[in-house]
Image (cartoon, rainbow, N blue to C red; front, side, top):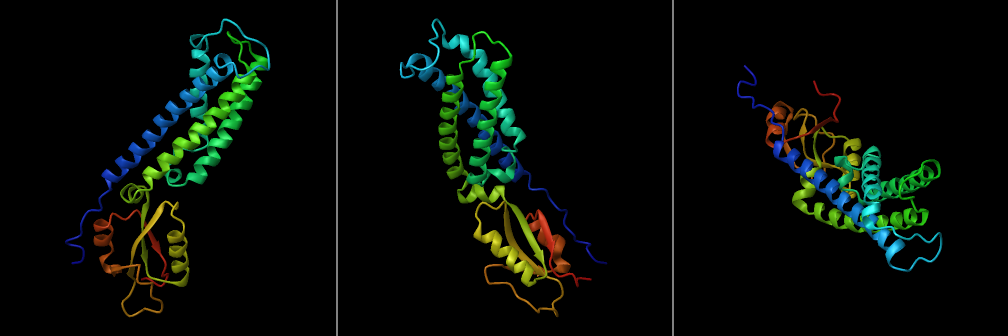
Length: 239
């Protein structure tokens, strides 16, 4: 009577909670940095005296621009969300994050400049302010995201962000896949090991860094013990 002792497959709840926490931390950090960048842009444009070009604006205070700054911050966050910045697979890749930040800020600046030509805001949106704020947010967001990336690249956090992969059987294709995962640390996957399909069929063997965790008859136990997220059937002869 097989599987009398079969364990229940458990969802790694603690791991999922850690991923949600890091995504929330990234979003709140982005919001804080965006607000800081927009406020810095205001100071550079209206208070620093560095900008002599454009229309001279008098009597404008930070409180007058507070509504525009809040609207700009929310709109930029929504843009990042639409570009899927807050997906778990993005957290480990600084390059993907930087690309989304560039795209999002370019779209945000173009949208605000276009809106300022069509609609009238009180006070008016300074086009120079939009450009300066865009550059300030770009620098601050890239710096913040670099620091955040360094944090999540620590061994314990990075492991919780990766989906755990188990290979059933072994083939040259499976070996190439595992090599590609190992060579790119920004990949959201981690190969925990492999299980043999049938003990008498061992045409190909994995490298020593891929542990053998049992055979296919023990698959439910292995999945439960190693909290496997993805099972890849490499040996199609499995019966």
